[in-house]
Amino acid sequence: MFFIAGTGNQSKKLGKINAQHCPSCQSFQGMELIKTYGYVHLFFVPTVKFDVKYLLVCPQCGKVYQLQKEAGRALEKGRLPALAAERLAPAPGYQVQDTRFCPRCGSEVSPADQYCRHCGQPL
Ligand SMILES: [Zn+2]
Ligand SMILES: [Zn+2]
Image (cartoon, rainbow, N blue to C red; front, side, top):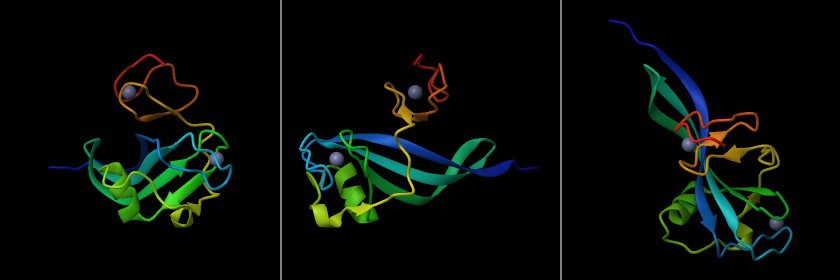
């Protein structure tokens, strides 16, 4: 019996929060909600998720905000229409301008990818 285990990082686009106001550029266009997490995989199947973070990205100015986990979860589940500007903390370490997401499954794909590595959708 043997195990193949490792860790990785993944991020997933959860959808647009239409009511979210960007405190940086004052845009009312809505912001993208993104969830990132590290995972431990066993036999290449992600099993344990850890270090879950929620981010909001403004498509107008490209600014990234990190959310408290429970606030992000409330947005994900649709329990909150939007967050107050003071609950958004700037997350300068994140570069999402170079990141693309698969239109079919919402998984993160690299700008060079021609096909989604998760579902095979041509990009
Ligand atoms: Zn903005
Ligand atoms: Zn996909």
